[in-house]
Image (tube, rainbow over all chains, first blue to last red; front, side):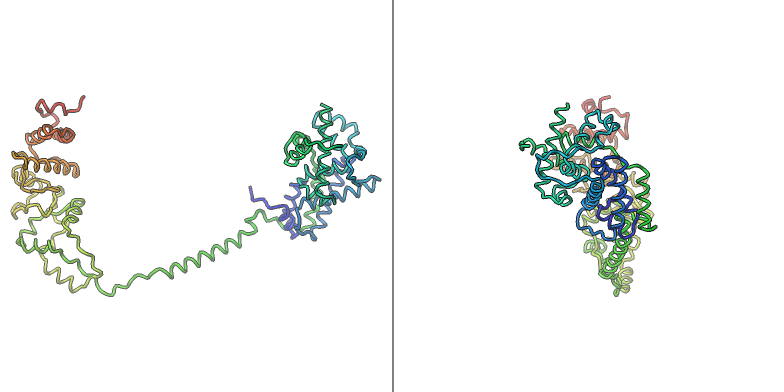
Length: 185
Length: 298
């Protein structure tokens, strides 16, 4: 197995013309980024489109790329921005509220689709359903950590929130998931 | 929603990617982008980047510079090493022939020249080294040989010209020490004659190593002092037999007598060893009854 370069090194190599570097970079992040987008979208087709858009933005922005931060932070920032654009286009909002007692955003329509309801008979499916029903800010923080592998500070950098705010969002998200899962079991 | 302390623990587990929620989520998250999307993204990336192949791995990027640096370092190191090594010293003066030791000179002057050439048998390899070391006859190494001195030395010692290990009268089983008596010139025989002499001439032991009294005769001791001599001679003979791996020149009776003396002296191990050697030569010889205990049980 050849020595693995860092994400940043691969992106720099791709910026400098090495197409193979992008292949490896894409392979590393394709699944997690796809699920991050999928959990926040209404339909899989839309998730596919958004997913491809995100990568096209990455490709187009390669000339300006500077390894000042983790590549994952850059990637999920681009993805979040694309999701926000999508929400605005559909009349929805990803605006967050730091008030944990705010009523949860309406669950993503995807969770109510019949084909998805069938798939979620099992515990894991129930969990996914619950995650998708979390408030947007909590769901976003949860997914940025689980799918993006980002730390609290990096999540705060992407979302524009402080570290403690991110921590609070995660705490409430987890508490709600646990409560719902215990009740379901 | 009020904060529960258990929530902090739950958060810690989640951030450490432990706990049931994180584990269940990972088990559930199996979705992957469709293949056509993969193909489209990768194709777009290649178009944007051109057709340059990817340099795979760290080695492909740094391999050539490192290899060049390694070659340069090696070349410099080898050059410096060669520069520091001393050149072979030019021999400005011829080597000096090793000068004879004082003992050799005394021996040369004491014995007739013609007797020395015939009497002194050549030395075997290991025994020669031992004898030379004991006699201190190792010549000092001279820094160089001077040709004229070499010739003079060679001319001065013609009798020693033949005193090398390539004489035809080499005795493989013989050792010459400073203590060994010199045979008369006529007694420079072949192997067979020498064995005969050693069997018949009891004044001359066939092999002597560390022998304090070259004239000692085995089997003739009667006094305590002579016994001590005989014991040491017996020991040296055993050692000689062990070193050279050859048979003693003792007769059968003398051999048995020696074994008996060792047995009577309580030196059972030596007696057994001597008996084992005896049996190699006389496997069926009868032994005195008291020596039967030394025989290995069958």
